[in-house]
Length: 90
Image 1 (cartoon, helix red, strand yellow):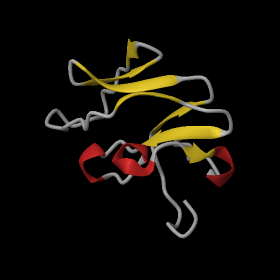
Image 2 (cartoon, helix red, strand yellow; image 1 turned 180 degrees about the horizontal axis):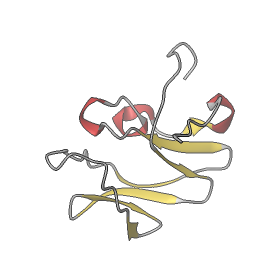
Image 3 (spheres, helix red, strand yellow; image 1 turned 90 degrees about the horizontal axis):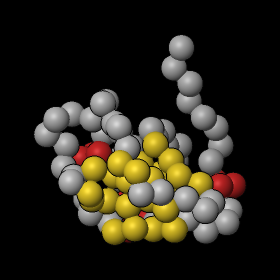
Image 4 (cartoon, one colour; image 1 turned 90 degrees about the vertical axis):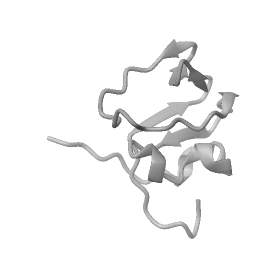
């Protein structure tokens, strides 16, 4: 992700996880559909099949799916070393 600036995302998967889309239009993590109540009802899900996350990598997805340039958009897993922080809403 070098050169792409700071990105903020909502959802991630780490080493050993299997993430996929779409099962009934929903993203699955290790075979379990994710509850994502923050998504707009008209959000379209881009199918990307099932991806096994390799060691040292993370799969990152934004919560504004229709406008997020994230792991789904041909970028694939991201080196964990490229993640510089975690946003926390209080």
